[in-house]
Image (cartoon, helix red, strand yellow):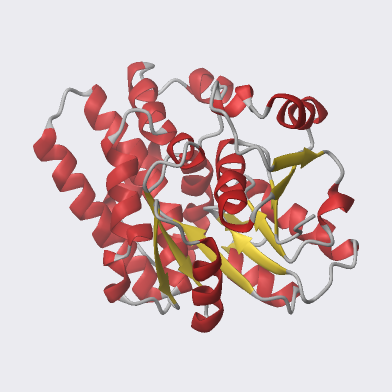
Length: 308
């Protein structure tokens, strides 16, 4: 069996990336901690909990044992941001080989202490890593519809190598060495999307949406520049593209959450019982400490933080 790519995370994005990897490399394995999802993927080639009736690539398989992914060359991490530090530390305890590479598809920050995912990886591992991100809805990627991704690494040659391996006729790949700006964009765009949903619920129109996206991009730039990122990276698909997609569609879970949160009159009970993971909520809470530390006051982000 080809053991090129394994995915940690059996949610919608992890499953979609497994399909993408299987199309490029011939096969891919998904690790999920839910045995029923692994059984469904292996038996029916579907993941109805996260991707409804989408038929998965027939060479995507799944396992509920983390040990099964340890001899793959590349591990795609597609887990919620609150879980990525725990997963990485677990992999370290399993004596993960230094030759295995990480492809980080998580958007968010590590906690306790608050830090960028790249900072945590570099403090704990010698393994090569890239970030893989872009303006994509998981179901479209799983169905092999056109998509664009940005692969980012301090080691640009390695990013280009991964890009070449994953390329296809339906996938436009760009590469960059600016891991700071791409990480910040992935964190902040979900917060801006919550604001987009709020504006929709208030009955605001296209003018407000255009204003929000331009202001949101500016706040991404301010944070990224503060941390050493480059404003030239703002035009990457993983930055402006992802921001536009997330804010423009009510099917985006962060935009949808913002819409429903406003209509609940910003109810704390609604917030506590919301059934779907909303990364923007976690990111806003995490960024509170981060922005205070760097003495940054950003109006759009702050307005969402104040409601949460």
